[in-house]
Amino acid sequence: MASKKHLAASDLEKRQLLVLGMDELRLEYSTNQLDLLLAYLKMLEHWNKAYNLTAIRDPMEMIKLHLLDSLSISPLLQGDRFIDVGTGAGLPGIPLAILNPNKHFTLLDSNGKKTRFLFQVKIELGLSNINEVNKRVERFSPDHKYEAVISRAFSSLNDMVVNCQHLIAENGWFLAMKGRLEQTELSAIPKGYKVIEEQPIKVPEVDGHRHLIKIAKI
Image 1 (cartoon, rainbow, N blue to C red):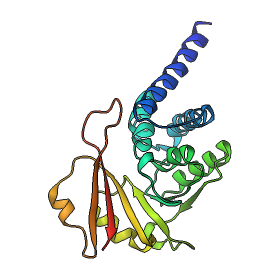
Image 2: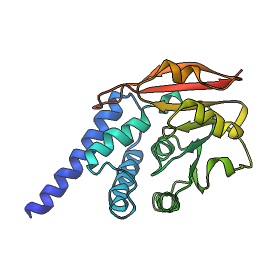
Image 3: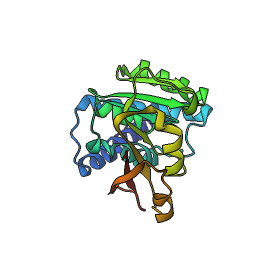
Image 4: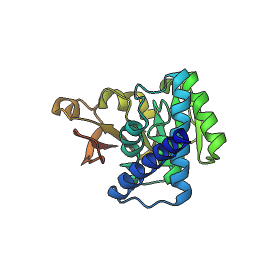
């Protein structure tokens, strides 16, 4: 009996932490969306044991560093079609898709184990607004281009623009989730593009600098 109570308390703690963080971010969400986020977390915990989807093992840290970090940019999304490049375990794409059911997200990754996990998440959670693609970004030619390329995987803004520019619609943009910003990185963006916005983001319960960089064609 004590074991069951401990598990119930643990699940409750996860839910409370997620709710507090989403409320601090001033996000609107339903009970069903909250349940889906926690179901995704549970799948991430389970699959991570065999697939090494993330180096973070503590589910409470996953909520802070993965779920809340991903959801922090939700209010800044404009448009209907997005691609999450180097999505890995579906971050930030899956949390954003859960919170934005009327927007569509393509989740691109070259790692087959990770895209198999993404497929299973899509099926088990019934997420009709995502599709997973197992390809390298330079070899992916979509039928329709995207209003925004999102990523928190690229080491530099230059690499993101160079490797993903073929995915962007005419009036689209790049949304790069970054930590500390260096001026040299901002100034190294290829000709024909410019940073049009630098949005500092405060992720609840996470120390350190977080930014969303918006880059557009000029």
